[in-house]
Length: 522
Image 1: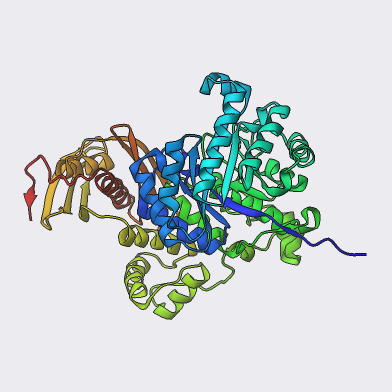
Image 2 (image 1 turned 120 degrees about the horizontal axis):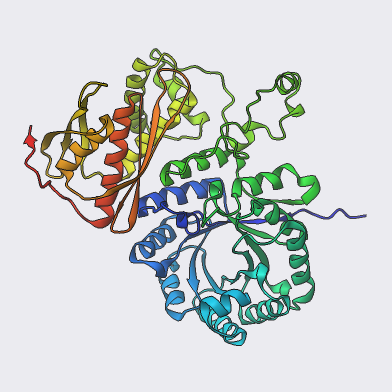
């Protein structure tokens, strides 16, 4: 009796396309490249780098990723429109393994209300688009949008036609998070049985989380025979997001007995990837988030603590080290040296040159002077700050912040910035509070009108000396720009976050204002 060999499930990451569609998560080309590099280290099979036809910026980002990231397949999304398909190819043609991913609505609801067409017109557009994409490259994916609300007979007919036209992957999209696991299982099972040429294509699934079932639906589809799963790191995406890839990957990894499949993902890179995506997008990971949340491996109940102390497997389904959580008890402080810092950062997934370590070590010593012990969370905040300093465009640099405030005083802030021309500029302002005063002083120098739409403060660690992490969003001309900053002084962290957001705005819009007011140049 022969044992059936496990089959591989292809992991398709769309963090840089569907994930970026999360409200307020716009990324620069450099940020997308940094995420793509980490996704490569994670080992995903396919990176959907963007929607090349949607904007010149997205086109350039897709092109840059296709040129640099060589191991995984690089895909670009395209509507069933000739111009979209041609733009997608122009953006990805430099990739080692290019893929065009084209889509069109297929449900009666969307065909009639969104496209204002009939099903036969949709079928013709789908076939001609796949044929056009096929002339550009061999690897073509087709998605019937809103497939879980699509009439089954039409869906089967559509899938057969696009496979005949050359589609190598057919992606069954639960676009509005409508389906439930048992129902989705049956739909995938029916497709496998009733599409006569289905053996020529991989069945993929793309599940949204509107009802909180994206991961469950994705796993159900795998059990029914789907061999590609699409999703986003941390469950990012439109509305309530997509299937969280880290959850799908660890479900497959942990329940090999039930699923009988595997992935080529390096699970030890999951935690590092999650934190990078969270920092760049400005979307914090909720503490009770599966796999990567701060509480995912914490135990507060006495019964649970007792069980874990006796045997980890009593209440822990996964070994934290499997997803990249550190397991060392090494404590760092102001007496720690470079070797200790390097070792701890390597445990956390950071690889650095000697020059990079020297820069980080200097900032680490400044932090250690203000904190008795430096935790892993502190180090992650430090590295995030380093990443923002090194990899992102800087137009203005924050040099100095000083605030006077109290319950019987008018909050007053003085700031000093370095301008694009290299000069240091000092200005002051009053406000309703210390942060408001700082922001108004900065505005007097930078002079770029914008609206502050979100301001969040979180403690990175516990204790009175905790690092504070500030996330803000500012809006200008309908576009949203995210800023992050961290420091043991929350006012300084707020100033750093605002400068980060302003520098991103200036870089993306191509502005370099020197200020409308007449501040003091120092």
